[in-house]
Image (cartoon, rainbow, N blue to C red):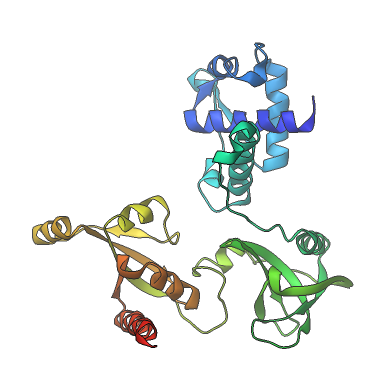
Length: 312
């Protein structure tokens, strides 16, 4: 069996078990038979076990069995499929890829969003990370006439808003973010480094909205009011992992909320430039309630924007 076919089967199996919560092999087979992949043949236990082992090796997703409840299978670490994890990203991407590849007759009716691969640089960085080698980066910032060269330890990479970013650590202990599309040249050096034992990429960015770091902005509690359909968008796609929808404290508050059609959401993050930019992009649909200084700043930005439209 060729690799693309096996990948489709792996993805189908993970999605089937994840959606079911817990499911027996017999129930898996009843659904398997209905797919074109089966060819009308059931999924043997030996094939199922091989698939289960391959899924754990490739995706870090392990399928466990509840032997006390009728030998039902479930995702043992399903938390990775609910987080901004590599496993979740890979599974989602491959699932969509499979659906689209099986629907080529509809390609003129499927519009996709381009995510640049930055193939060469991405491959170099991952290689350097695996081998704990420093990289020499020739980087030109926006509005800079010339590129500068930096030697750094590649700590992690992050995908944000259709762009890949590299988090690098300098010899003096400072960190910096480099956008892949601004890297003009990159060389993996022979100089090695030791990554900090307590470094965790998710924890490093946990207080960030996106990729802005090192500007001195401190995290604080932020409350946004979402009007109209914006509240539904936030419920479906939270802005940040700390997002919590606030319930009105009084009956009057509930009545006001129903009459004006809004919901309030609380966050704990660093209100950096990229976060402020997102607030501006939502226009009148989002209003900052707290902190007051942020509300005033966004308000002033909107006033400045209006002035630009009034200028001839």
